[in-house]
Amino acid sequence: MSVLRAEEQADYGSCRNRRTLGEMLHFILSILLGILKIIGILLLTVLVLLLLVLSAILFGPVRYRIRAAKTEEALEAAVTVSWLHLIRARLLVDGRKQTHALDIRIFGISLTKLKEWLDRRKQKKKQKRSSSQLEKSRTAQAGKRQGLDESGISEDTKERNSRKAESSDEQTESGKSDQLNVYQQEQQTEKESDRNPQEEDSVQQDDTEEVKSRSRKNIAARIFEILRTLPYKIRTFCATIKSNVERIRELGKHMKRIGEGIWSRLQQAAGIPEKIQQLLDFVEDYHLKELFAEGKAELNGLWRHYRPRKAAGYLRFGTGDPALTGELTGVLYLLLPAVSEVQLEPDFNDAMLQMELELYGRIRVCHLAATAWRLFRNKKLRRLIAKIRKKGD
Image (tube, helix red, strand yellow):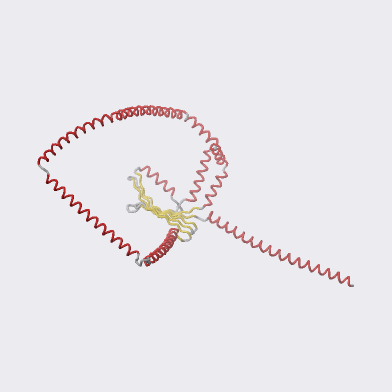
């Protein structure tokens, strides 16, 4: 019986251990599954946000508004672009004053005002720093002024005494120099009064002889200067002749180059028919006509989506040629949208232009993306791009 009880107790303990182990594993798995669930929810929210942003970029319309006015008084234009009323940009141009202004707003906040606010904040910080530095320097200067040296005399009094001493020395020196000048002038006047009339005559004769000797010396100096500069003049004359000969040679070479250029141009003109034939073969091989037709169709589709949806205002115009004015009127009627309130007033006599127009429209990126995808999938265009790349390499 004791043996049976021991075995039952062992079986009971093992079952209990298994149950606790299973409970622990269940708890750990529930925690892991909870963590994975949270991660999955976060990834799903991020994916949904990315899809929302992508759909907003692709399908959210970019609205534009263009206003232009040309009258006798004003010449101005304004372009406004907005995306989902979150981002807005406006450009104003004044033709009379030759000025323009750009205003960009994100969530209604102007970037120019934000920049001005940041600049004012920086200037205030700089002013505070400069004022603190000035206060420190003033306190330091005040401390220096209050300090006295060992003799008990301040620095300011020393400087004043030194300036007074220098001024007194300068006054004494100037007084001495004035006395010497007066004494020299008195001596000269005494010497001039002591001269005799005979001495004055002899002085005049000596002056005439000095003038004659100076004139002879000047003539000799001129002759010597001419003889000295004569070799230099001969060298400069020879150099001018040599430079003229070189210019004539260069002119001959230039004329030769011109002749060679004309001959090469004539050879190129002779090869023009062959190049035209090569171009025609290239157009036929790569189906450029079809590519141009497809590109024109894509551009027409983009214009159909991006053209102005509404227009208002008036337009008075004239070219001076009645036929051309009539053709331009027909083109404008084709370009203007169906919902249009523009009054066209053609002038078939004079050349003039007066207008006040407002155009409204929208642009979606999805149309441009679809056009780019179709062009990318076009085999003819890919073949043409590969050929151009090979030629470039």
